[in-house]
Amino acid sequence: NSMPADSLASVVGELQGVLSKDVSNAVAQERSLLSERRRVFHRLHRQRRRRRGAAHAAAQESPPTFLVLGFVTNPRTPKTREWIRQTVLVPAAEVGAPALIRFVVGKRGLSPRDVQQLDEERRRVGKDDFAVVDASDFNEAGGIYSCIDKLFAWFRHAPVAYPGASFYAKADDDSFVDVARLASFLRPAAGLPRVYGGYLQYDSFVTEEWRHCGWSAGPVGAAHARRHGCPKERRVYGPFPFVVGALTVMGGDLGGWFASSPHVAGLVEKGRATQGRPQHWDCGYSDVTLGYALGSANLSLSLLSVSDAMRDATYGAMDASRFVVSHHLRSQQMFEREAARAKAQPAWSPLLGECEAWPAVRAEAGGASAELQAAMRTFECCQQWKLCRLGPAAK
Image (cartoon, rainbow, N blue to C red; front, side, top):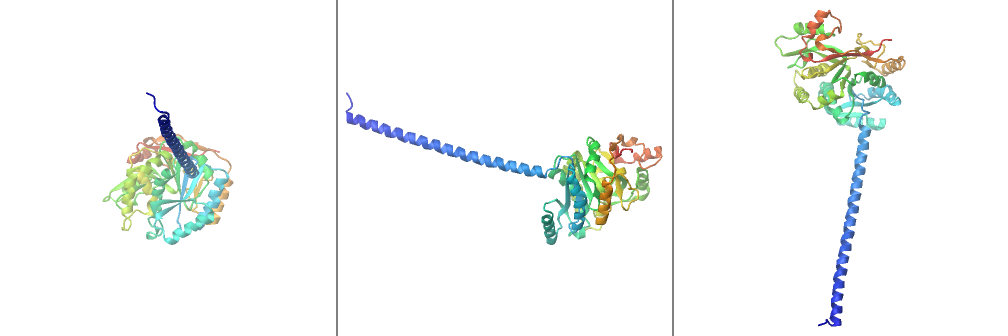
């Protein structure tokens, strides 16, 4: 039997309605998917742009991969920083020295006025050349802990904040540093493992009192001072080498270790716990304490002596005529004088001597050979260390 024409037309109409509805739904779903794809695309595009912007900002902050230098400074001495900017930072930028330079201040112990003045200084300079580290500063106990706290905090902060540098360094803010020459000077030492370098001296340390007890300019004198100048009834570590505050240099690998070391973190925690006690970690022994931290770490180092390339206005033994650092400068005129003296230096090249195993060192700061070797054996810290000398090549 055939379907009546009017019924057939009705069924066809119903089918067309269903198909039209299905097509409309499919079109709407496709449009919705396309719209969602566009939203996802634009969201991902914005995220990529933000990531590229963040990466660009990080690249602007990250070091030029060779040297990161921090001047440990008092937030209340803006004139000193201006002297350093004019005689150190500006010349370094003019010659494109491969270095990132920061003024190191502590975020704890800043008064509201200190914070305001630092913000005003940033605006006046037109950039932020400060590194604010997790350390106490001048408004806390008159600053008697601040320089040692900032010293340790800087070397823990810098390798994390500015990764990838070959060297991390610290200078006092009474030091003139010829940054371009310092970078060139350190190049021959870039391949040495775990460099700890500067102007070498030697000492022992009364660990419970956070003070030294056996300083000497050389290892023979330090061994003698340890035996005869340190208290017998106290726990004493030493002798060990350390470098003076004019300039302290760590290789990138040593800096990375220092930043993450439980040994260093424990020492810092213990030192900070003494603040407020009669016997506490102290700015007066900050460089010695850093040497103690490295000496007691059971770590092999390349001890880099750069004694022949440093000057000091008050310490006659530091009197290099070809130099990268000049220390204990007290005025704008002194900074400008040393900057002019550095600029007037004839060109010279660095020379890295053969690194000697610690027990076999032949000569350092005098002493007969047998006496020197006997003294070197008293340095329990350093039997796996090597002593390397870096200085200007002979004229």
